[in-house]
Amino acid sequence: MGTGSFGNALSIIFDYKYIKQNINHYKMNKINEILSHFDGSAFSIIHKIYEVIKESEEKVGLLQHACKSFGIVKSDNTKEFHSPYEELIPEMQRRFDGLMSMFVNSLENSYVSEADFYNTAVFFIFGSNSIYQSDEEKIFALYDFIMNPAVPYYYIAKEGLYSMSNDEFRVIINKSIVELHNVRCVKKRKFEQRTQRAAAFLELLGIHRDLYDVDSYNNKIAIMCEIFWQENPKS
Image 1 (cartoon, rainbow, N blue to C red):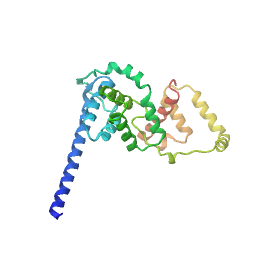
Image 2: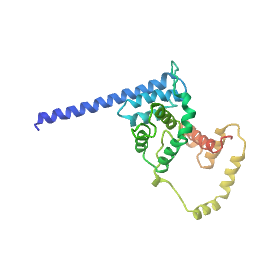
Image 3: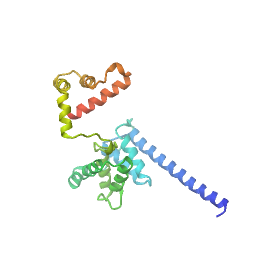
Image 4: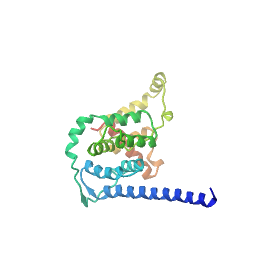
């Protein structure tokens, strides 16, 4: 192959990649437009998102984008849409009875990477051999996936998790009697706001307010509130 032919081949490859990137960017903007303007139930909004992803070759990136944007992007409610399949949700829930939760849990328990998580989800939902075959089934699957508490996925490296033996843990507990008593006191005490309880816990962990700027400290308070709220939703 001459240098001219080689240069032309490279140009075609680069042009193709550029076109694909532009198409993918356009599709992401379509998802943003849906989230920014449509008024409807979560199922109806996800139905519209499904229509965008279904027609794209780059489904993985679009699915990831949709999962990370859903519930974050605020809508001005200037457009309305009601999915004709919404009335089928109870029937779909009976037919697929926790299947998506089991699928997501299996990926979480396998500590897969973020890329593998969304790649596998695309095959599971959109694949030709998927258990979800019709459009209404795939829309329900996408809805069930996006609404799962583990989505958007947060990657945790298994090798980075800290663990200790029961004997080691008991030794630490015995050495931390005072600190643990203080923790129990904070847990039992009544506070006017969850942020006050969170601040008390941060103090016990040695995270003092005067050591951080306001935004950084408030972020830690919000995280601690979320942790405690998930453990004690009535507190």
